[in-house]
Structures are given as structure tokens and as C-alpha cells.
Image 1 (cartoon, rainbow, N blue to C red):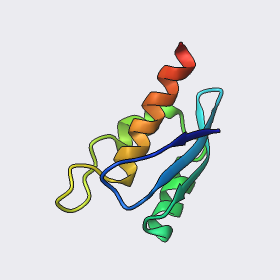
Image 2: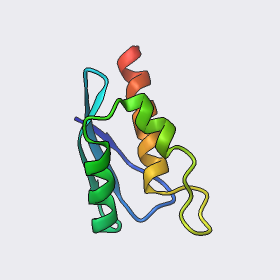
Image 3: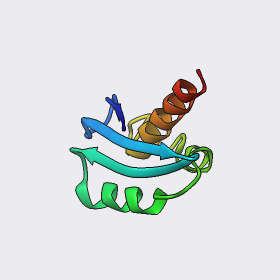
Length: 84
């Protein structure tokens, strides 16, 4: 289980697994519950690199980041950590 502390968003923590390259068990702590549950379900089982491509760069209102963008950053970090 990876744990990521995002910045610049309402959510306080993102937890997830990556198994055989696929995103699993995504949980956001805090933030917009319905939207974040939807995002979590939509990327369940998706290849982590594909999820990063789809989510990276999404902004929330006037913010330069968003919960999906922070999830992409978390996935990138987890993949780098796995590669080391």
C-alpha cells in the first residue's frame, strides 16, 4: 500500500496499490467524497501509466492542481520507487 500526502487540494491523503502495473484499492481521505469515489472506481485495474496520462495536469478551479493530478503525481512517485 502506497500512501501519498498531496498538496494544494482538499484531500489530505491518497492510498493505493499497484499490482502487476495496475492501479488497485485507491482511497482518498478528505475531499469531495462522491467525485473521488468515482475517480477511484474508474481507474481500478487501469494500467498505472495510462492513469497518469489521463489524470496528469487536470486543474481544479483556479488551482494549478487537483485530486486527479495529485493522484497522477503519487502514481509516478510509486512507479519510480518500485523501479529503484
